[in-house]
Length: 208
Image (tube, rainbow, N blue to C red; front, top):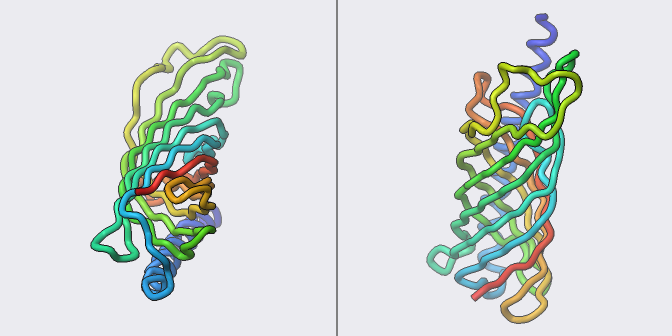
């Protein structure tokens, strides 16, 4: 039991160190990019579809939809961002004779910042955001007899953090192809850091 606790504590500590390192890295990149970047549009809105690996102990992945908007701050390299994620993940209840099949819906609304690392026809930015996560279980079928005590359709509120990168390719002065890869971390649990998930997105971005 002590070994299990120590292993869990080590994983959480490693995650905290990793996130802290990413924050420092992003800040340094933002400072460097201010002297080398080309003009960055004031507003950018992107929409995409992809997959969400849910930040939940049971794991599982499913299709997702992402809508994001960023606003550059005072002509500088930093941008404020707002991101909404919606996804549905196929999952199952606890193992046993009453194991049931469910779909889990996820909705996430996060605010944060985006820093361009490379600006040009090919662009790369680092993203950091945090905000509430909501999830609910939807019964989709059964194996054996469903658990009568299980309730479906109730939203559970949590908190989450997103750390990732967005890559774009300019198709026209205002339109870009976009790809995003990010870590979605469940936070503020009993031991601060809960389960980790992931997000992959392909879409388009419109700037003005």
